[in-house]
Length: 633
Image (cartoon, rainbow, N blue to C red):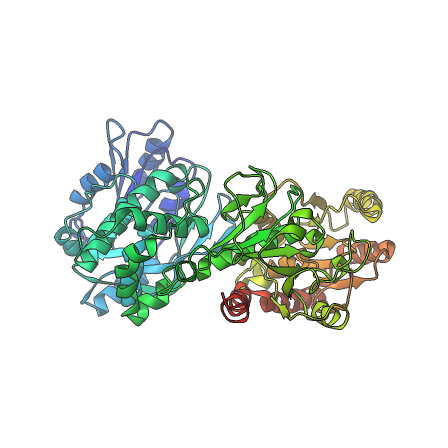
């Protein structure tokens, strides 16, 4: 490496980054490609940032460090830092992210071999503050797909990019009018002068933690991002007067559904259809643009075709975590993603499920502004068919039977759905469809398969590889006598195991209560076993979630035929209330851990394959078919 002209200049702006800075810098300095300079700028930190930078500069001559007298902000720090860069290629690297060892080597090789491409990113993974895998990040897109994404939102993790320095200058440098979304503003501007690409390899880890920039300033960042997107669309359409208010409602409502915005609660207005038509027509002309944004910008959106017609999912005001309630929320989120105008309908304002990490629009029966139109569709879970509101509702009604054991629950006699004005029934599993057709016929029955939320799924190759804690997760059905007995017995036996110096311990119990759905997923990705003592549900929902996360399941068979559970193959399955046999199985697995390793490995793989049958895409397809064709909105 030459002293004054390295191949790569790496710029690390950092402010109060002591927690992860050393790990981030080490990931850069340990690259297999070593011809680079690392320029780190402390933007007026009040913690140990400068001390850490000084230590690294002392150890490695490639590191050059600078310190701002005061906190100037990211844009000014990037601008001053880039002026110090002398490499052919440029990388901006945040002080809490991780570059995998071969990243620079792969990107340099790509840029050297593709002189017409000005920047290249990589696929990424999201990690938490403890380094635990959280999910897939940015994927490998074509240049046309990148253009489509940048029209609406930033599709890159900026720290994963490597760019040609001369083109960064040609694009106007890193100085940005956007304080909170300067990366999106720069990349959208850069896309006007050069093609970009994404390597089809995971070479970068983006960290989520409580103080990372995007989380703290999410509201301001999304506000800036909207203005950047609006300018990009006006430029593409050649229309400087393209409607800001209508597009703002559309843009915010979409990202609320995607979970990126939590506090706006934006709703579209009926007149937005006409105002946004130029954008829909533009998207419809290009196959790639339509592929990327078709789910959000449907060229003929259902909600506008059908005037005020809406879909409402009636949901009990029940705060305890319930997979059934969660499924209603997920249906609404998927329907809105597909272009339908769907809502959750609760009884009293301002009730909302707080444990579920899904933001959906909610209407309230007690609101003076709420009313049902005759053409609206009301989805009524089987447990609510006898509610006075559902009985008296004068609109189209569809019964949603989530569990066969619930069909006659809390009712004096079996329901007559056809006679009560219901036009169809939905259910989630094949055996329930058979029961409904045989005993509750007269109206059509449709299976809408359930799904496991995407954040539960490991990568297939990680199912066997990820190390597991000596931890047992319990699904806390505390109203069950079995649960109390099982927990007391398990604690007693584990205390014996943990006291044995030659035993496999220490082992611990974690009850799945008082945490969010995503936190349940993180726990399941780390624990060894999951015990579910639910005797009711035909679809023991937490079981396939644990399967997707690689956690071995030990559970009751619950109600109805085993639509997805196979004893000894993808789970350890026991008759309801056979509590001591279930406990004995778990303890044998723990005590003879080494002996059972092959059996557990096979079961994890078989369970993961089972969970893959319940992916979100299948549910989306079934919902689209049911509402778009069967119900004929």
